[in-house]
Amino acid sequence: MKAKQLKVKVKDIKKVNDNIFLLSISSAYLASQSRPGQFLHFKIHSTILRRPLSVHRVKGKEAHVLFKIRGKGTEILSRYKKGEILDVIGPLGNGFFLKKAAAMETTNILVAGGIGVAPLMFLAEKLRGEKLVLLGAKTKKEIVCELEFRRVGCKVSVATEDGSKGIKGTATELLRKTLMGSEAGKINIYACGPQEMLSQINNVIDSHPVLECQVSFEQFMGCGLGVCCGCTIETKHGYKKVCKDGPVFNIKDVW
Ligand SMILES: Cc1cc2nc3c(=O)[nH]c(=O)nc-3n(C[C@H](O)[C@H](O)[C@H](O)COP(=O)(O)OP(=O)(O)OC[C@H]3O[C@@H](n4cnc5c(N)ncnc54)[C@H](O)[C@@H]3O)c2cc1C
Ligand code: FES
Image (cartoon, rainbow, N blue to C red; front, side):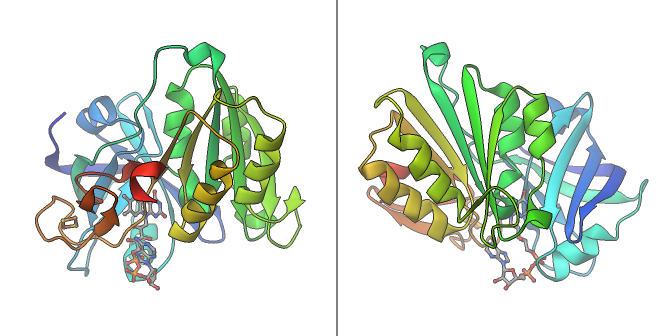
């Protein structure tokens, strides 16, 4: 599963909502070699540093990326057209660890904060056992992929900060409520979102023991290859590079 630098063709690019886009690229290599939680490092016109984006899904010989416009790089990427060529390095990083043993007796809870939903779709497709997805966003318009998760057999609950859909609050509050009635030691959690959300999840699971909680970090990145130390985080086992040692970590190795 060696990362390669590739020139790939934009197969399609679709606007999902006001500022979220779904990009499909043609690459048999990336489609066959990527695992849930891994990312692709995109060279985008007029930017110096590459931008990391998670593999959202793979279909046949295509890899899909779901991204939100945050600044210059993602804005330019949203204006790429079908047939244009992108320079991409991937697949990069260590993805989610998929447990096989006893998978059918456990419940998998996938927690997404905002665009943190991006890597969780690919994960949901690969996980066995019961799957519950907790989607959190500022407002109803920012909730994406709800139907797609249901189509791959997940139950879905929604939280919005303004209460326009689902419960009023955050995905972490949904998680707290869900864990209250659940049996200890039967739950695996997989989460992606802002660091503040991940740290709150750590507090929540302290009072509700779970089997394991894996979290994917959205750290700023430079090289993406483990060379520049630009993405370092402090863990209980010393400093780790999100691009190479992560982006997925066991939450208890971090807090
Ligand atoms: C492993 C990994 C996977 C990611 N997967 C996805 C994904 O699937 N979809 C997606 O939309 N985004 C994802 N991101 C975040 C994405 O890389 C950034 O949004 C993107 O690089 C921003 O580039 P930009 O040029 O548009 O914004 P910039 O002009 O670089 O920044 C614009 C604003 O966004 C903030 N920002 C930029 N990068 C980050 C970041 N990494 N974390 C928090 N704030 C940031 C800056 O503080 C600034 O205020 C991922 C990040 C990592 C590390
Ligand atoms: S981005 Fe350079 S070491 Fe991680």
